[in-house]
Structures are given as C-alpha cells and as structure tokens.
Image 1 (cartoon, rainbow, N blue to C red):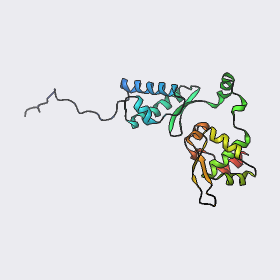
Image 2: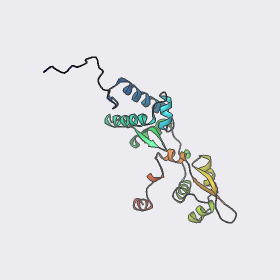
Image 3: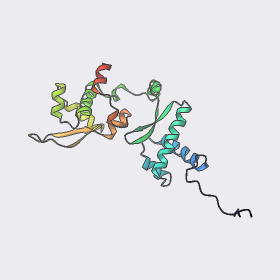
Length: 197
C-alpha cells in the first residue's frame, strides 16, 4: 500500500483571526494613543479610524479597548474614557488640585451654585421650558440660562405645545464633555443624590 502524496508547496489555510502580535497592530495602538494625547476633545471611533487611514471602526474600537487595559495596567496618572460618544484621555481626579494650581484656574471660571442648580433641573427634566425651571427653583433663571447657553451646555430643541409656544431646552454634547460622562444614563438617580445629601 503506497503512502499518500502530499504537495509541500501547497499553502497552508489562512488563519482568519486577527494576529494580535503583528507589528502593525502595535503601531496602530500607539498611533491611537498619540492621537488621543493631542486631542482636546473626545474623538469618535469613526474619526480616529479616518486618521489612521480609513481603518475599520470595529478594529479601532478593539484597539481602544486594548489601549485602555494597557493604560490601567501601567498605573498612569490618566485613563482612557468614553465621553459624549467619543474617547478621551483624562487625568485621574486625585491630581486635579495640582493641575488647577499649574493652570491657575480661577474660581470665576466655574459655574456658580445657582447656575449648577438650574443646569441640574434641565438635565433631569429635559426637554423643559424656562418657566418650568423657574417654578421648581422659585426664582428667575434668565441669567443662568444666558450663561449656560454661552457655554453651550444647553440648547433650544423646539417649542412646547402650550400657550405662547415657549422654547424647550435640553443639555448638549458639550454638557457631557464638561462633566466627563458618556451619556445622560451615567447621571446619578434622584434617590442617589438624596442619599449623598
């Protein structure tokens, strides 16, 4: 009985799974790190994919997950977070006092308590009219609304089906960026806020 013949020149079947060790993958992950390092706003996976030469968005998302794990393993003073539909490198909260000191952030640049209270009502009741916010706060909110619109934290999204057709307001993507959250679902519940208080 003769031995079966083998063609040693026949190529082996290709492995369809991506090779995590290939140099291009490591370079792409480092390139993503560099892009996020210089970005001053959250970058979407689509935009990052375009910057890497039209790489597939799903591959970019996988690389971002690897990068996030790598950053956490190294105990760096920053982390990779999903914010407002994008990705951003953000410093860890414990370093905030030192960063404020370096940048000499002025107290006047912060939102006042009255403006924050107005913004909180809008965030939890949106879409909401100015009159509805005033009825909850018990005071005029005109000045607070001006500040919030100047800072692009709220915007007009339509009109209410009420007499006078008052404008309806809601928070913006800038609101998510300002507070470093991925979506409104990350806001604490009213019950959690009461417990904190």
